[in-house]
Length: 207
Image (cartoon, rainbow, N blue to C red; front, side):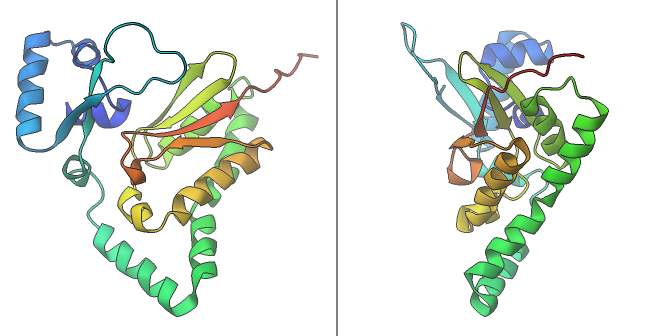
């Protein structure tokens, strides 16, 4: 169940029951167990735009302990290396490292859109980030465009201390799209998922 939350982001009990083909009672038992072990936590679901009537749905998200159980075993070493780089080479060196780390965005995005031009920009970016460990997906945002959601960030603990890593990702996304994008939330700053607003772009007309 923790893996499902990792891949799909903060989820309601009903969502999890549907995804895992379990009864609501079984999902609740699993969630109670994971909460007791501090693997997941409950929180109110964030609503973007107008909120409907009634209380916001409760969603379950991974805690830091939960994320640690996946692929962040080398966080301490990475943080120490980044601190050493900042102390010995300065801020610019950290920024340059962050930009080089996300060079895959421009490289892979160009290759993917060439192979599958029918993908929307957000869909192509979601595939690129997923291939690089981010478990990304796309949500429609009426009128505004689409929302790129990264349910997992392999460097979230490091980015908590070095936000240049998040900033470089945002820069890379804006660069490949050729337009301004806005980060709405990041895992590194305590949100359940990294979200970036991708504005609508006119569809290319077929020749």
